Image (cartoon, rainbow, N blue to C red):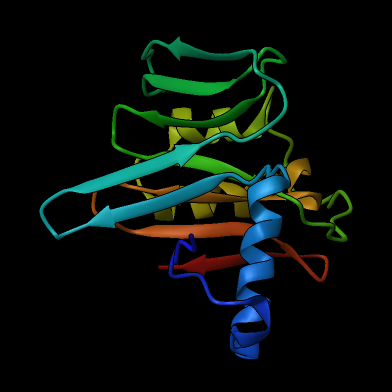
Length: 172
């Protein structure tokens, strides 16, 4: 007895499907460590989404209460204490995307933020434009290996990083 499962022999699959099928097969067996960040806005509200894909499973969330001159913040990251993302009480949110290798030497004309620059940015900025101005003033060592996406409650966003030894800002 022969059972027809509706499968065609491999030699009858169109060649144009071979690339996509093999690519999909590779993604199904290979681990992928890639962060995902996106902003959705409809003019009335804005939503910021991010996830941290990394081999470190010891994730954490911590809070910095508002203080004079500082907004309240919530940060997400790992047990190393470095904020990978976060948001503040003014509606500014950020997340990092690593995987870049940029020439970004320290600039003597730029100030050094106390502690971790991305945390200082979130504590003091109420808009994307404030964040851009912050990074034009304070040197961020992380830009040699990563870029930061910053968004605010209006739906404005920007990707900030380094390129060619200079600060790069891509507004959206």
